[in-house]
Length: 592
Image 1 (cartoon, rainbow, N blue to C red):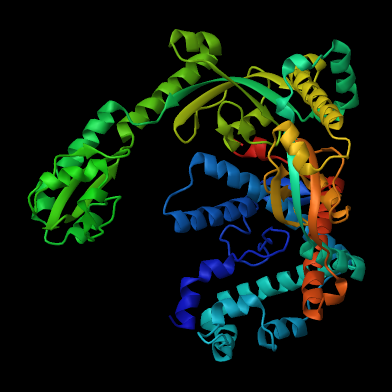
Image 2: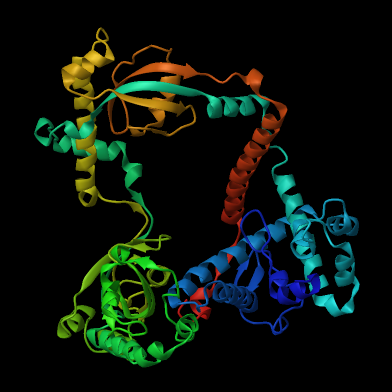
């Protein structure tokens, strides 16, 4: 495909290319690509007094919607839209903050810098994306034509904006992280962690071998643990709810109808001379294969093909949630070649419409006529309960739903939601309790505390038990024989590892291993999942003298990127905390 054709086909991508190491999209409202840019829509919010317009928001959301459809072939569901709505808002807030900061610092991009990004020895990746030849070189003639030809003025303008914004952002990153440095010691320590190995033998005494009857937990123990670990029970604003569901799953009637539909294709399938084309045109979810399959390798549902004559098609049958018919194409010895025409068993539109109507009726009467619970009882619906925390889209008992979380965060006790469409259900819910941010009361977390205290006492009991069995005078093998425990061998334990084969996630044990000498046996060690006694059988400590310049440079670059990313994330969050951010979405967006 030629460069010009690629540009024409990718205009939308050029106009909306995503830029920024922070994972945000820079606002392109400065470029007059949007019909409604000068209409002055009501502000959805503001960042330090700078408006976030409805046009910006809707244009960005429309981009995501179009990209999603191109990638999946499907339109946004209500749930996916809710997720992207939150993402778009965050991106707009972040980009406003960053642009304001760049203006404050006077960060600009000169024409000379821009020209170097296009025509320099190392063109920007954006230029390479659209103008690179098959041999990896940049087609500079095509670049010149696009950037100077009026026919491509819009594309050229978009490219210029993208490049200027990208370089400007790079300068901001360089400014913010200018003081961050990676020392030689850090590089050498990373090299040693990556290239130091040990071989160990160990015996593991799991904590769960301590029985409950061996543990005594008093009320004083629980209360003391709560006071000492109170921060563990700090919570964000949280919500409790009741809800009812109306299924969108296929009914028995739907199954019969889809079986009938695929069955009506039997004759035309049997008469087809091109089975591959037939399956494509009829929208079969199982594509044509055409290979021979041994009779013994046929799945159970397909064995009926052995009873067919060549060219004959079976009666419709159910196959892993699909309605199918199977056609025998050819027999050859103990092998057969066949084709399967198949539709998914899905709820028909009439079924989904009926479920939606039932949900709408319930929502109306639960709001206008009776209480939520009374209406559920009146209709013999299963009244379910759920719990959610602000900022976390996981709803206990329901799964993840940004739509539900949006309603909870903007609602009050007693509010009843509109009908919310989820993957397999329509849902209506009522907020029964809103709990403010703070520490969860002792009574509410007592069972959790009891489990934690029991585990703590179980660990102490096992450590004391192993300390009584092993005093350091016996070998690891003798300890294994005496306790009827297996001596486990773990090879290639890396210094920067978190997991030890046969032990699980034990980062502190890894540190202890490399602090010991070869041949040394440890004292009983209290790990995350058990008590260990281990021996270092062999240890290879990396020598920084073997650190060559290429590895040093690569490690330095990796550490710089990690350090910069961590710092930039924190810096952006603090920028946001100090900003005056106004959010009017709940008042201006329908269902916001």
